[in-house]
Length: 229
Image (cartoon, rainbow, N blue to C red; front, side, top):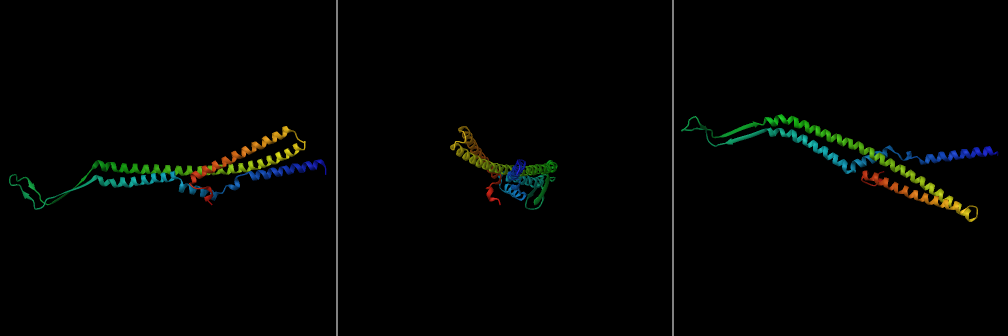
């Protein structure tokens, strides 16, 4: 076989390895629309701030009902009861005393005028509370997605670091073996050892970042990520 053919086969082999490596590095297989929806639904059900916004909406709705009912505050019913029949005052005939039941209805005009405005204001405050709730829901959905994507990213990064560490360990063992046989210098052995130490440090950082991102997503979920199937 000619040198050109050997070189061509070598190049094709390298390209195949690179293609396989890129396929393994992607986070796309870990992204499931149904699973992300489960994460979002879990966050909506468990995260305390979601309940706080719902409470605000409920309070604003109650204020509307109370404001509508306040119309009756403008109406005052009074009555007087004196037993017996009406009689004429003998000293001053123009003055009479009615003995029996008397009732009256009084309207507070000022309250009647203000009441429609107060109802309208209560409805607007309800809409504000509802809009705030809707905005927070959108923000929460986006935040859940972001944190989950970061979690998948750091999962993939850790896998890469584990592979790189394994390669560095293999390279160091080979370098050490060749050094012991006198085929390599101490300088190259030292470089290989330092490279191995760096890869171990990077792997520890990748593990830490993965656990931190897991904690971030679980903060919103209110439960362990493993509990969501």
